[in-house]
Length: 260
Image (cartoon, rainbow, N blue to C red; front, side):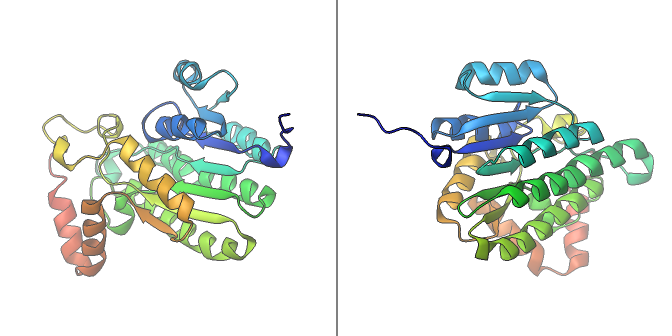
């Protein structure tokens, strides 16, 4: 006779930015591991196609997390229903000199990359119990400022520092917090940030979203480290960025962004 599934047996994961890239792969791989997925993103059509892939027993919420209404909607979802895993993946970047970019775009980035992540983390942690986990997707750029992409790298520096503090605060509760730092990943980030084909990173430097997610899920099983950098090369770069004099790192990073 089969056992009845209790509420405590159900593993629920809410994934933001789930319509494509790293978020979509998280949703697919977690669904394959038995999680019930709530996929969150702005693009309803891509979310619907995701559910066709992973199964209609999963859920989607189409909303914009750069808006107050969108954040309040998902914050309410996390407060009213206990999720065992939250993946804060939604975010974007924009190339260009800070003063030349529309300030409205920078403030939208701040709201999505930082404010939404903070509020959703707060709602999740207030409803979490021992064994639950939070993954905040940051970036290798958390370890070094990148001119022409400086506002984005600053938001990711916040995400990494914030996640590391949460890791320490929550570990005695049995709740694991990870700051995940991918490097260059084969997604639409470069194009959507305004990058040119001329300055598109070579494929040899890229990780696939699948590789990034596999690294994260392996670390999730071990629940040991607050910050996870995906990929051997990226780990070397992260150590280099934090070892070199700050000015040297800044000049090196800036040289990579000429005519982006």
